[in-house]
Image (cartoon, rainbow, N blue to C red; front, side, top):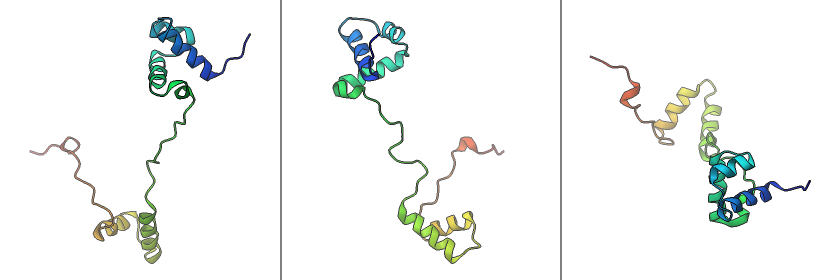
Length: 115
């Protein structure tokens, strides 16, 4: 039995669809992956060639909860100067000083109906 790398398997799958005319469903069944995965590898192969078939990190490019360094320093500054202030007061002060924008109103769909 020969050892085949994951990248080689993906390349064989792409060639099976592109050159041998195997359907996407057939290739998915043959290689034990979903049809969506076959489409993903075909698109990456078309865009980047064989190099596009390598593994990629699923880590986001920008952390969703990370604030910029300047805002973090301002929060620490306010917290140090006013240790009794909680998160609501610090947020209100950041808005008051213009360091952050006030969040918008929620959409009407989330408000209770009034008569």
